[in-house]
Image (cartoon, rainbow, N blue to C red; front, side, top):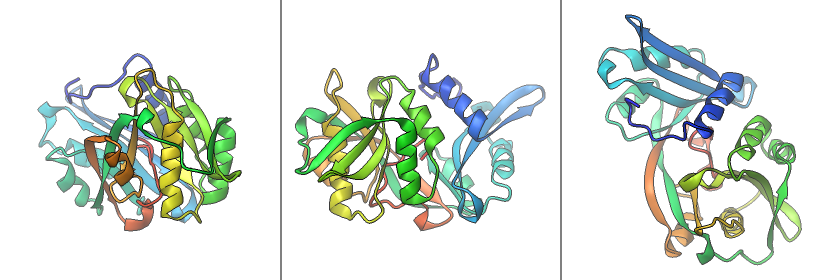
Length: 264
């Protein structure tokens, strides 16, 4: 691709685009009969508390400086006061996004490591579940229905919805899966009354229960998340990072969330 993105064009990315077409908004920019860029958003939640997440914004390098990205974003975020995205470190990204009223709050770390170096914390158990069940649990905790996303994530290669329990009570719910080096936690929500210790242990419990052939898995965590330190201590490494940008600091809780960088 002209943008240099390395995606799974056979299975994962086409399914991702279909998901956005069904549940989000996609816009394509055209100039002189040629496609010059595209962008997409997904509304998370409903009503006045809904958040418009910018999932994608790509501009052909030949069209940089023509206002293509600004035009796409202006349409996608029109009438959406609560906004967020995970911005790449591309030089054009930060200035453009800040001009639309979002600020950079913290890095989202792409962590990779050997799950065999992790031990499930005492009292935790992780079991497979139906994607609809996981969506219901997360909705009960947060008031936000992510069932469609859990179905999508569970449909990835090696995908599965899971519920993590502490002393027999559900304490975290999410989905794992992904192709090749992207295999790991896709999205994990913890019970709202959980503290730092439970948020940390939920991540460790789910990761330690994975069985990739080479032992390697990935999780994307906000830099302040309490699971970051023990993962780094266990030899996990930060492969890359994006910047969480949002109109308000509290749109994602960096101490408890394990978001999808594509769909949060």
